[in-house]
Amino acid sequence: MKLLLISMPWQSLDCPSLALGILRERVKHCKTPPDVSELYAGLRWAEFLVETTGGRIQSADYTHVAEEGIFHGLGDWIFTPALYGVREWKRAEYERYLADLGLELGPALEMHQLSADFVERLADEVVALGCDVVGFTSTFMQNVPSLALARALKRRRPELRTVMGGANCDGPQGIALHRNFEFLDFVIRGEGEQAFVELLDALDGHGGNADIAGLCWRSAQGPVANPERTHAFPAQRIPAPNYDSYFTALEASPLQADLTPKLVLEGARGCWWGQKHHCTFCGLNGSMMTFRSKPPDQLLDEMRQALERYKTLDVVMVDNIIDLRYFKELLPRIAAADWDLRIHFEVKSNLTSEQIQALRAAGVMHVQPGIESLSSRVLKLMDKGVAGCHNVRVLRDCDAAGLTVSWNYLYGFPGEQPEDYEPLIEQMPALVHLQPPSGATRIALERFSPNFERPSLGFTWRRPAAFYSYVYELPESELMNLVYLFATKDAGIQGEVEERLRRAISEWRRLHFRSELTWRQVEEHIFIQDSRANRPPAEYVLEEPLDVALYLALQRPQSFDGLQQRLEKEGLMATEEELRARLATWRQQGLLFEEGGHVLALATRAGPRQVRIPSSPEEEQIDDDHGQRSPAGSASAAE
Image (cartoon, rainbow, N blue to C red; front, side, top):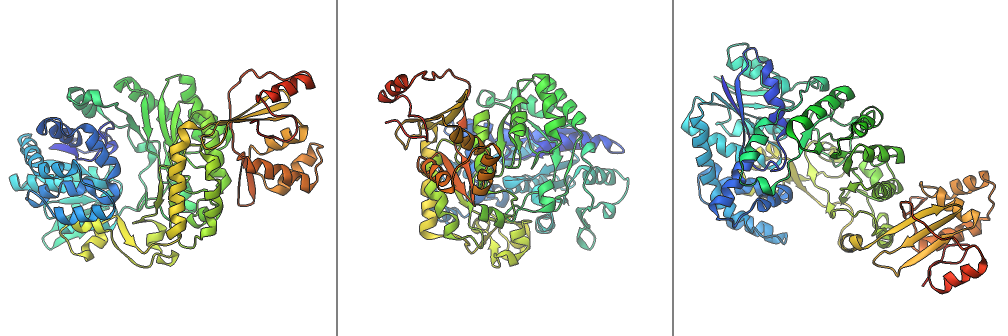
């Protein structure tokens, strides 16, 4: 048997397909292993666009669609002419849809008009390979490109077997895909490591389709959907991905100079937090939330082999959430290996300082901690299990450690109120030195999320997101089973508060790269340097033992009662009025974040630097007169 595995657009150009890399190794477990090869059609599409347009469309235009088009189905719409056999498909309607959102097609229109030619050319090349089975992996906007090529292949060679799997095929989505597109012979719902091997065996005469969990197939009576697999595939049996085909294709590509390839590795699947408290808006993991992870020894060995084989130091870990045991059993060993990596990990936002340092020492440069909000009450509505001050703390401490943080501010949760946002909007100007969110986004209603599965949470009305009607020529009843994103009535904040939140975050993003707020301790003094872009430059000096102890205590979120108790344990006495006055002064100076009854210091810890400490009152006065530092006592700004 000759097998071709295909990753269609819009796979990231600088990342190989994890699904293809794993399945290439898994099919070795077939009773008669097939002759397998892979096709990175996303890279081929980008090359085609550059060549055909004489460079008007560049690889950056491909990446823009891949990264920005998901919530509008742009990548799928681009390939609709290839699926329906026309030059353009519902162009006027889709342009109006985008215009209502303040968006334009730009280069996507020319891509749309070229997609059919590309698919026809690609189909000819695939048929010429003489494959018996073609397997497509489909996630996000790979559905229509994959369907278009599958249709073109079946027109040319009806006996060719086509298979589709991936996140877009999970649960009822896979059944709807198989039912509505007859040129898909098989669709695999759920994890494919076992089902795909069993299917290839069945096609080779070993076993039958009816026994393969999660398989959609066709009998003489019509489409059949086998029950889904109920047990998660063991993590230790997931093979290290083979990316030889990707790196070979990249080496031969005229776009090689434009791309910095990254290794895509997997340590864990599922979500250990989601097993206990599924975040209400999250549709990730679909029908299989069960958390499992590879043993640290196995993952370390896989990482070592991949680095040696592919000679790249950028590593993307696709785990939805890091296994907590990796902090002690994996990261220190990566650090000791001294590989000089640049790693991405997804983590939970209640990281400790020790965990942040372990990440940094191992070469983790980028984290996605799932911050989502700074309001404790809204975070509770999400079932996130953290408080607002925790999220600000992780921003602060990751910044001090040199970690890039990606996050998005989500709003629109049923039950949220303007008072959940107004105190935060007021304080956002003090946060501009911390890494800002990518934007403020109203939550989408995603399939598999608690918000979708449990209408009682507030989203009782739903229908397929509007853009799907410009992508699929199917009735709404079929789209309800096929699609991932749904339109629903807006919940939570709206109007003026929503606009103020958006403006505040836009301003945060604008000022961030010109803002710093740092602190350092020298002997018994604390020096705070403020150069945030929205405030006059200032330096604060804390010399009194009470002020120093108070500031150090505020490195972690503290309630007022907790602060008092901590100071008393250190033998430092202050009246409630004195303590509240100090906190009020620091809050007014933008040195503190206050939310949910807790307070946190905002300055990031600076590296060591020599700071001259005056040895006499006269020297102190001279320094103050020159505006270099503030007098002793409570912190105050030097003009």
